[in-house]
Amino acid sequence: MPKLKTHRGAAKRFRKTATGKFKRSRAFHSHLLSKKSSRRKRRLLKPAYVKSTEAKKLKRLLPY
Image 1 (tube, one colour):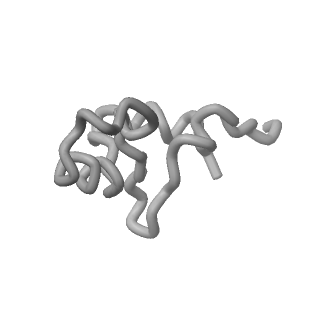
Image 2 (image 1 turned 45 degrees about the horizontal axis):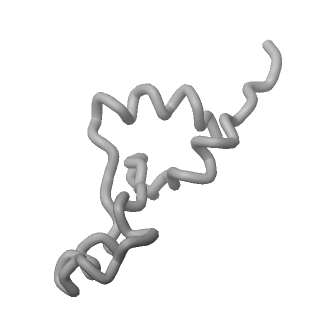
């Protein structure tokens, strides 16, 4: 069986944790930040985790 290729677009956006979950960054923290509150901006910096239904798809994209 041939080696599987990693989906490079997914590899740049998601990281696999030690427990097997996928960590992602939150959207809406790249520009137009002056109108957003400090609290909102702080919360957008914190990582989020991919839902279990989406994680099944990511396991195919990121096999290693």
